[in-house]
Amino acid sequence: MKLYDELVWRGLIKDESSPEIKEILNDKKITFYWGTDPTADSLHLGHYSSLVTAKRLAKAGHHPILLVGGATGLIGDPRPTAEREIISKEEVEKNISGIQKQVSDIFDGKAELVNNYDWTKDISFLDFLRDTGKYINVNYMLNKDIIQRRLETGITFAEFAYTLIQGNDFLELYKRKNCVLQCEGSDQWGNITTGIELIKKKLGKEAYGFTMPLILDKFGNKFGKSEGNALWLDKNKTSSYELYQYLINTDDSMVIHYLKVFTFLSREEIEKIEKEQIEQPELRVAQKALAHEIIKDLHGEEEYQKALKMSEALFSGDVKDLTVKDIDLIFKEAEKKELDEELNIVDLLVVKQICSSKREAREFVSGGTISINGDKVTDLEKVISKKDAIEGKYIILRRGKKKYFLIECK
Image (cartoon, rainbow, N blue to C red; front, side, top):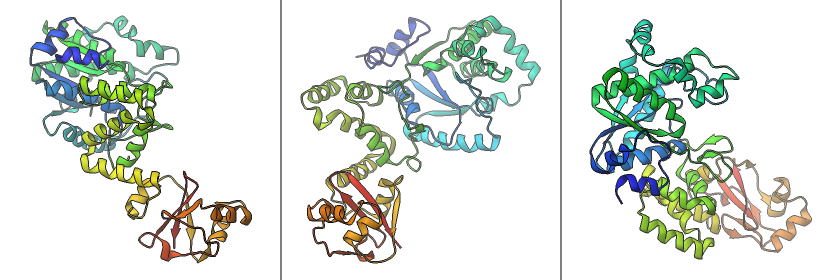
C-alpha cells in the first residue's frame, strides 16, 4: 500500500483539508509538522498515537518538524469544559527540554525540533493585531467547534486568540521551512484550518492539513488514561512494567485497532495476529504484540524484556530472581506491611491482616495456598524473619493464585 492508503486502512485520517492530500502523501516528498504544548515534562500515551503517525510520514520520506509550543504553552489551548491553568515560564522551559528529548529519541534524532516562542517573542501586540488578526474574521473563529462549546460557560480573550497564534505558527513554518502540511489529533482541526487560511490570504499559497481520530478505549475514555492519570512516555514516571500491564490488559474488542494505530507491523502481520486472536483469545497474542511493539519503540528491547520478566514472575509466583528495584516497580502503588521482628507464619498472617483469624490462617497454610517468595509454606510452626527477605528488604507473600502482599523488613 502507498502511504495515504495505509493511513486510511489503519483508521488514521479523520479530517482532511483537500483531496490533494492523497497525491501529496503518496507521490511527493514534503515538509510537514506536528506540534504539542509543554503542559508537562513528558508526553503521554495519548500523544504517542499522533507521534507514530508522524513517524510513518517520516519513514515514507517526508521531512518531519516537531514543534513544542513555548509560546502557546504560556496561553493554553482551550479545553471543552474550562480554562487551563496558567503555568510559569520557568516550568514551560523545563517541560520543553523534557519533551524535545523524548521526541528526538522516538525519531532517532532525525526530526527537526522547533519552538514557536522563537518567532513569537518579539511580536508586539499591535503588530499581531495588524499582521495576523486582520486576516481572520471573528465569525470564522466563532464557528470553530471548541470555541462554540465554550461560549456558554465563558472563554477568555487569551484562549479565544489561541487559534491565531497556532495559525501563525503554520504561516511561519511555511515561510521559513517550506512546510506545507500540518497533521494533528482531531481536536486541533480548527487551529489547522486557521493556519491554512492565513497562508492563503497572506501569501496566496496553498497549504494542507489532516487530523487523526482521538484514540479511545471501549468506554469512550482517552487511550492511555488510567484512573485519571496519564501513562507517561518517560519510563521514570511510568515504568515499562506499568506500561506492559496496561497494554496486556487491553480489551479484545479494541486490540486489533490499537495494533493498526500504534505499531509498525504490516497489514499481513496484523491480519495473521487477528486470526490467531480469534482462534485462541486466551493466549492474548494481540495484546502481547501490542505491548512488545510499543515498549520496544519507546524504551528499547531490553526494557521490554525486563517488563516481561517481571510480569511472568508475578504471574507464575516464581519471584526469587526479582531485585529490590524490580519489586519497587511492581508494587509501586501497593501498601507495604512492615516486619521488625520474627513472627510465626500464622501470627504474621493475622497481625498483618492478611487473614481475619488464626483459624483462617491455619487453614490457608495447611491447604498450601500461602507462599513466601514463591515457596509454599505448609509448616504451621514456620518462623518468618528478615533472613527470608529478598536482598534483606522485601518478602513477597502470596495468598491463593493472585493475592499478593509486600512485607518490608526493618
